[in-house]
Image (cartoon, rainbow, N blue to C red; front, side):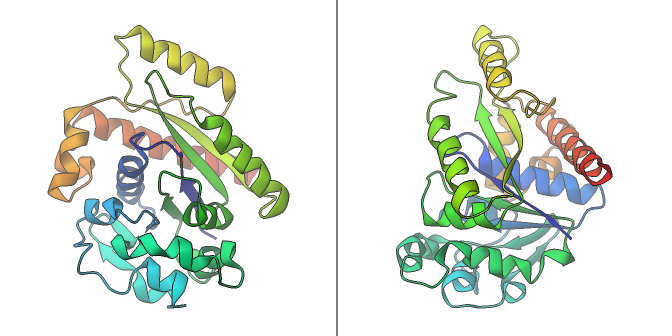
Length: 257
């Protein structure tokens, strides 16, 4: 059964989409079959995987709102499979409110195809609303990217409160898969201080690998490619390969235990 991981943080610009795209590609390069489910109306994960988001149909919107089978909407790319999104998804949060089992629409859709994949990564929008709630109710665990900047921990209290509420009322098995430090610069005291603070708050949950701040990571999306393809030997590429290895190792340890 494929493991479903929601990549989420209510703050924008922390590296959620970058992580989804490049972790997906890294896992595929390690021989895993991976689906990237784009739940952000901006559709950046979709375009970052080389898909024209404005031309794609059906999309995840049709899966959530029009009950289109998830398998019908999945697009195969050179870097992994994608359940695409575009700006049409921006209205789904309001439309979901009146639907039956509104929090579980994505969970129901992914359940029909999860056995076809080793991992399903969900790129969440930078907010705690109905689309994110659907992603969290569908997930086995959450991966939280945290940027190594001054306001890194701001808003995490709200995310943790939401996680506790979902565990209590909607998805008791939901856990933190891991916390990923992004935009890391080891030459600055600020990055070191933020890293130490995050490790104190999330003892045992922080990935060993950190994602550096690099120009190549910023450039790759404009070419519709993961950085692992755009510049395979860059520091960002090496970091995401390490993350993929670490993710797989943790998953195998969970199975053995």
